[in-house]
Image 1 (cartoon, rainbow, N blue to C red):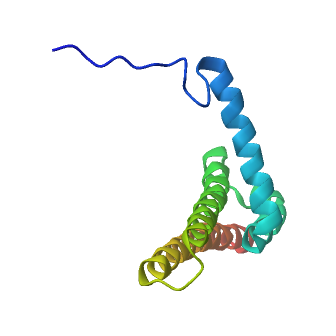
Image 2: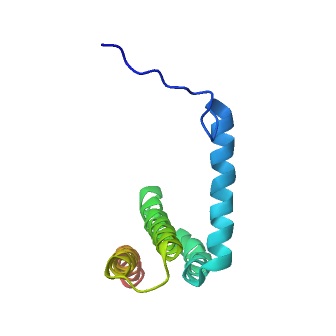
Image 3: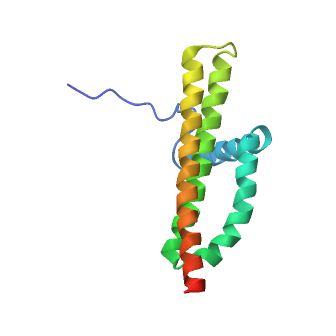
Length: 135
């Protein structure tokens, strides 16, 4: 039995390097849309403006700094996914439906967990920094 042939020429986003360029353009559009339409995303970016400089002071090593930054980026990733789920759910219909509500609530819960991860990682870093300053 032979494998079915895949037609790469007619891929909507192209192939090879062209696909990478198209994906990059889509990502930029996504960042712009999230910044324009999602106040939570803007708030989290503002938090990043505070946290990023603070990370250089708090971090005990390069690996520690990477963990601090990754915990912040993780929050942004989850917020973008939450926003995408909300937008898609609203596209399907703005009237209340139990499954739409559940999808939005679960996505919101994911953002809450990402915030908890951030709080734990940064809280421990702050606690360790205080210990080194007083000890």
